[in-house]
Image (cartoon, rainbow, N blue to C red; front, side):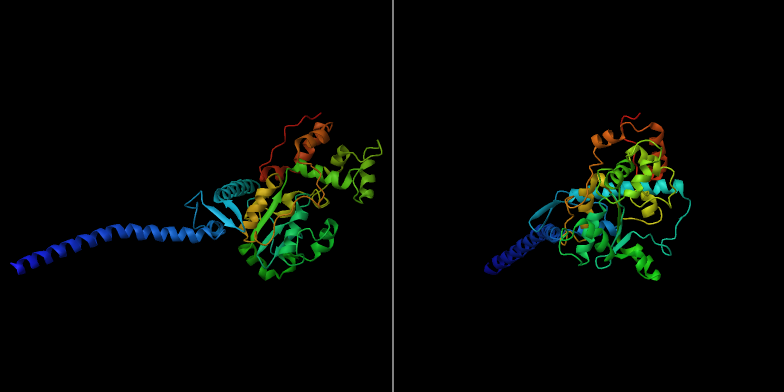
Length: 350
């Protein structure tokens, strides 16, 4: 009897053991999977750039946890910001590509042989920036000067020094060997900034030509003031009359078209920033280039803001400009309007 009981007991124990192992196994597998996934995203959460890296490589179209918070240096940044910026850039680049295909059947400019003068590089962090005057260009030069070690802080130099001495310290695409330029275009984070053409041309006038400006453009002011033989001041309307007939090769860089300056149909920019969304676009670019822990985009303090993007400023200064001149300005900048999806603002014209 004892042996039978022992045998039955052992058989029961074995059955129970198998049952328990089955239960343990059935409970453990999902648990292990859950822990592994949890660990992956915990580690991922510590890296602020994982989304950008996956995005840029094309591996991922959207991060799995949209509400995850990324923490760095005590700051919290929501992943939806990166998602939204990614979608905004996809929309801008898609529109640009469609518009370019309508205007150009093939590349029109050999960037490798003749790179534009205004494309600056940070070879350490692999950043390429197309400089467009009157579109936060001084601020971006400050950022590059910090990243390249010329300055410690973005406010170390005055604006005039940045635009004269500082600019000469930056490497341009034209300065590197021709056989290395294609690699730069293929591997660097490339960005440019645009601005509504009306706002940009108004900013150029207020900063350089306006009689109240301190810029030393006296010779051009006199030419503009005498354009129609009436009055002594270089008014905004006279300025528009002056630049409308100018050929692209004669345009000053401060009002030359963005299309001519940056060749967006020939260079595949990763980011098309807009002056109207400068803060968010700058934040996104610094994250995309993995340098947001090294430098912050500077404020407008220390530059020469003209508030030319504000609607009331546009309305005030365009008030009284004849409609035929408005049409002439639109035709001059028509590619900037079309490539970057700008429309004529709803203002009251004569």
